[in-house]
Length: 106
Image (cartoon, rainbow, N blue to C red; front, side, top):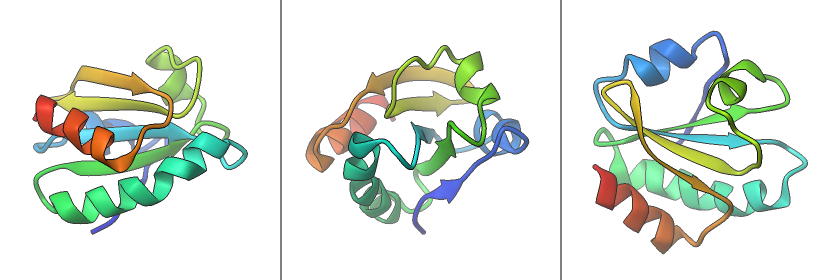
C-alpha cells in the first residue's frame, strides 16, 4: 500500500476521521533524518496493510497541521486512534524501533 501524502486540506478526512489507526510523519525535503526514515515507513506501510495507515505531511507545503499539533522539530511522528493523538515520537529511529512503537500503541 505504501505511505500517502496528506495536506492541510485533507488532514481531517484522512487522519482524524479514519476508522483505522494512523501514523502521521511530519517531514520536509531538506531534512536528512526525515529522508533516513522514509524507506522504513514505506516498508511498514506495506507490512501493516489495512491495519495501520501511514501518511506523510510536508511541513513546508502544509504549515497548519503541524502548527495545530505544536510540532517544533522534524521528523515528528504522531499516532492517531479514533481521531485523537495517542502517542508521538520526535526524531529518526531504526525500522525495528518504529515498528515496536506502533505495535505498542495499536
